[in-house]
Image (cartoon, rainbow, N blue to C red; front, side, top):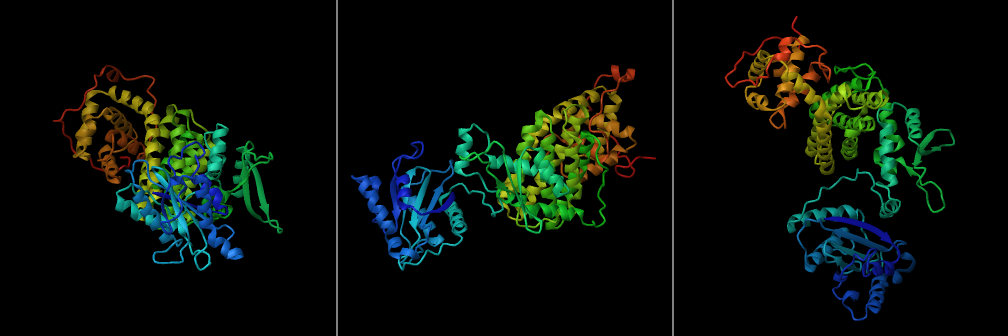
Length: 575
């Protein structure tokens, strides 16, 4: 169940809406299910509805008029409570119980308090009710309803369990403000897929991704075509900013501006500055890879792959502040990747970035001093430019997406450990979109690798199969039976040519993370080997092939083939 609480100053208008046809004739059979004393007039069951509405409004407003100037200006309390679409049908008596419990815990009408506020609960649809109350008590004092949303939400969580309803994922008030109903209706009228608030949020997040100064951030906003206003103090210091879409105007034709904090809590200027100042402070010694600036889209994606893989370990093993910073910076990498992705993967990556945006915020303060590698990767992705999605670009994209799936899963597990339900759900949703993007990005490069693997001589297949059985005895047969086996064989051959001892390399990779849950063990091993051994993401087919490779008939390894585990330093070239 979800509650929405608002305040107003016109009881008659609210009652007229609750008992009216609705904005699109969606109200059916409006009627009272509960009230403060059980005897309130019900326009929905009265032979004279208009007169009953007047009586109901007068009864609700009685104490407001008695209080006079002591009554709150916004004296109307309106709470709508909606069940999930898949919930079973609730009777009027069920909804009445829900309403009484909510007004009690919120302080509108506490249990056993004869001076509680006057209220009514109206039902005009199967899946929700509206509670209308006036916020003046019987002793003519204002109602004590502080934190009413949080207390109502907590009570609804208990109600869900008692009634066997869907248990809604609840947040911690770190979510971005959603579009209002008016903004949604305006977007529908103008045939826009999203509201201006949502478009601006995404554009500002992309402008932040990898930026290392305020100047660069505002230049990116301007280049994206946004209108920008900066709030300057008398001293000349920049205090804040607002942005607007040139096409989003009010009735007077003026642009509608939104401050960064109204788009999302972490898009306020102080929070953005926190990223810049932390990343510019002298860093502690960092043993992680410090890749040079990427000079091509494929190189940028390879560097992002390495940074994301290292971040996974930090999220799983580091302290909370460091893990929070890596998760937030992971969101920047996703924003940058979506901005520069090819058409085939753009939509899924964009959806992944939007979903992960919720996972990037919590009450745990991020220490951005530790996220330099990911923020640099995001910057390189932006400045290396867009990709075509073919050849090395496409393969490098598949490899970084494969690694970002692990990052999203690590983020989901970290949030679950800290009881951040909304963030954990958002990270899992992002992982689902990333899996869909991976399938699109990986199809062509994996097909090319498998073709190269099929062209290998039969004795190469037997040798690599023996290596896999020795290094991964419990998973080998499954991997060897997969269509991706030939791509793995081609990758192992390439690692051999690069001077790696493949048995030790496989053993090291298997220890990095479990493989049992992988949809395709062989495909996962392909990307892990290429990442760990520093192999190019994509290997073009040779211009000329040895005769043995051309004429060899592909041979799937037999179950009886065995091999010894090679020795040597794991993942290191053999001198």
